[in-house]
Length: 263
Ligand SMILES: [Zn+2]
Image (tube, rainbow, N blue to C red; front, side, top):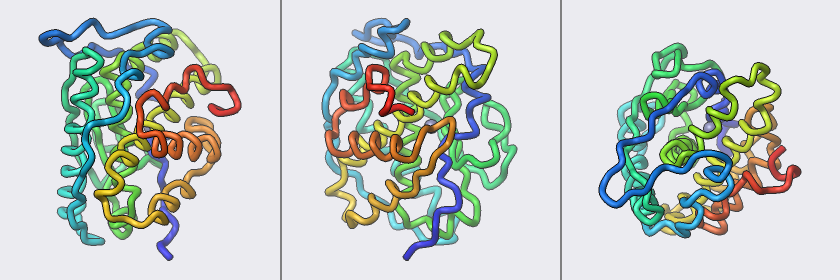
């Protein structure tokens, strides 16, 4: 039995950075249309119509427990797969695409572009500089062979997808003047649950190429726990599983889902 993951908080500490992030859409290229904005960007985003990802394989690199370099290389390969998987979806949606930046750190407080790396988080996506920062602490490195590194990377990439498709910018604009954190939480949970679903879409898509046991996925599912920012464990599990099962971006429209599924 693997040890309980010390913290799979995903992006829980990022609330503050989400709140002050004003974002510029990536430069439009070629035949890309405008990035959607307003409520439609959330509920009727063109990315929802792009269906299943075309990528079917993602070869996991060998990762050695307690070895920083192998974990970093492992994550870089996962990121390559994510780029290969998502770029064609943006072409289908006629939206501009750019790759996120990526950095690892071993310390809380490390500069991310959205403030110091927050305590309690495993990784962070900063929309200001389109960068994923991943915490590789000794506790995480010990469990580096678990699927959760892969899943957390896919989740952070989900935020990048939200950013490029106008979902995160719309969320930020909507709440630019919202004063209380409590008033933002219902929409923040949707942002987080959607990223979780998008991670599931990717994992489901390449699952057969990972040569992992079903229990590896179940372990990630069960590692979820209730937080105000990410929702109930049951909601997190629901959206992760839903993306995984349907393998399709359209499965991840949290913005029109019943309240009971996004609490
Ligand atoms: Zn997140």
